[in-house]
Length: 339
Image 1: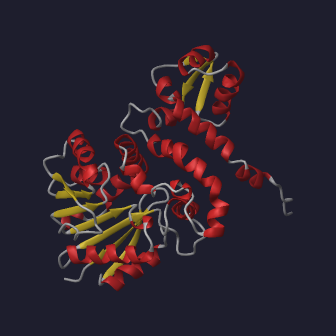
Image 2: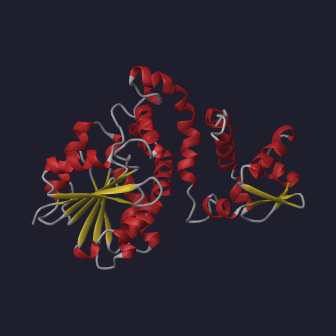
Image 3: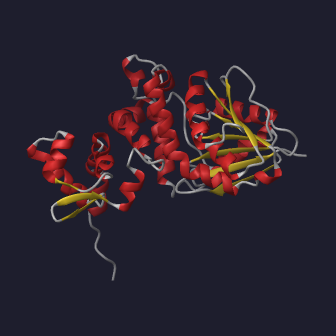
């Protein structure tokens, strides 16, 4: 017998901003970092976080009901997951991207309907301000937070690429749009024979150098400054672009792939990784919503399928291409230059 339809999924999704904002506010307040020091009572947490009596108990108990906190004998504590991934003091912290979601994306997504109707960004540009990257790169503190957010969302895939791609066949690599440098660092850690560079705008240099030094690979990974609009890409056996192509319109995407083709030798490789949309465009909801995020944040950016990217690579001259899943919604598209 067929079950009767219910509105549960519609309501859960339509009101999905309720649990989302509850979690984002908890991260903003530093709740999980505070609880990493030990369980706390309601009164202790109220005092530590500066919360009013009226909403505090409901707030913490909502986080219990959502599975983000545990409560025992009147004391609240992190779960295994929130203690590992949402404690700012741990290297496993992924909250940077969620902090950015809270401070930037949560408000801008309120303009999605307008973006769909006009095709125009809904961020600072809407009120006459500078674009996404001009805004971020103009403020050192904001830039550092953005780069940390990129590390948080990419760290798992960076480790997967470092272990999964056949780097044993190559000697050098260049990470284009390197941000904090986590992809370059993970590749160097997993492949001691490699030497590499991280390529990004000059403002990123000090942040990159501090990060790779902290990881212990500064001797084998160096920073090269520049804009991929103004100069050729660094020469290397393998060029990598992580969460870069989706920022731009199709002509820029093709230009960057062509520059990568020129930068690698015969037999060299280009690795593009993103939240690659499945070719049927019906399964990777995260990748599809990331493309909507590019609609909101950029003048022409969009996410794409593996088949799309393979087509652009072959048009640029790469002889063979393939798509490999990494972790979660992320996959990499690999193009190999003919020998």
